[in-house]
Image (cartoon, rainbow, N blue to C red; front, top):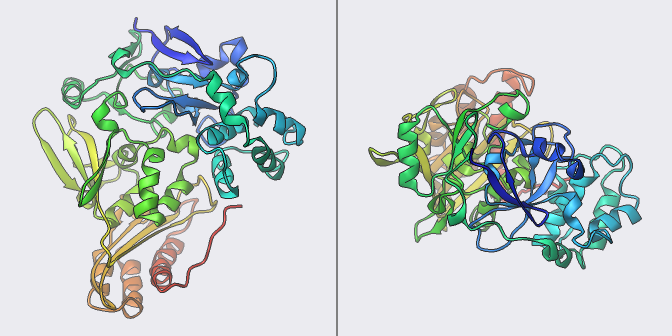
Length: 471
């Protein structure tokens, strides 16, 4: 038995549990911690939101996360705060709680604890948020009763003094060196290697074991399908996998770097990519989900890979036998399949830094603006020499069994101006892909939309932008 050690609401806990039990399950078993609710059990509604600070982050940094798709083995060494823990003195409510009550921001109350936790997490990191930042923080929280206007007002009213109240309660995570190398029990054990060499050795010895980073995709099997894992290998306890490195030529993100950690760098160099990331994952999802996981699950509708392909990204694969770098557009081999051998792991993702004459945009078409699966996702990057396209990279998701580049559309652009080449590029896209029909869109619709995105890119680069506001 290897108990999971963590702090919750300032108290150290050692939980002797299966490593694959969800954190929400554990919370709901405790009569004093039942403010956290289960709604969707897939990380969409936010009723289960708690605050999480992880070991090794360098400073006490709480962020909202979904406890319904977070597994107990993942919180070894972490510091958690639930809605019950917001008042360290157990007397006055937290300013966010007080303002929510005062402003009539809650009716049935089922979703309210999760909304409170999301807003506290926002204000802990950003004490003076604007409307857009508040809306982004609430994008992963569903409110069906009150509506968001009074909730946003409560967030603004609470902004002045909320951060000090949370930091009074906060307890630093356990030092990474002091955390266990395995947690759980004989029925479900999660290994926590501390170095990349140890990770590769462990994966070689247990090639069938799942690699678990954020779990925002894999953990659905536990939360919804009630599957059980006898074994998994975590990547989050490896310092080198959590590093972000900037060189003269590229950005390098470790295999355990989350989307939330990567977001400031994406905003700096590729703002269009940052907009996409904010749409396909809420704060709760971005706080756990990793870039490597979004690539490694090889989903045909993953939103990260088309953008990364267009940017010329590559992945570094490591095993006990070798280390190799693979261009992302050569990584996928078919539906949910890749070039990775059973003993290999993604240790880094490298993205070339933009050049002055390059232009990049990515667009997502979905039925819902936030937190929805793409019908089509298109990404475009061109290198210009004057008014002529000298290089082009165009990639799509949702159009085939894998995310794919469209070489015919790229050829149609090279040597032409954008306005001249885009009609031919759009036609090439329509002819190159044979998408499927499903509940998100018909094959005909997908083909038409994918072709239209070529024109949208040309108009966007020409300055004919349309500002899209999240409501």
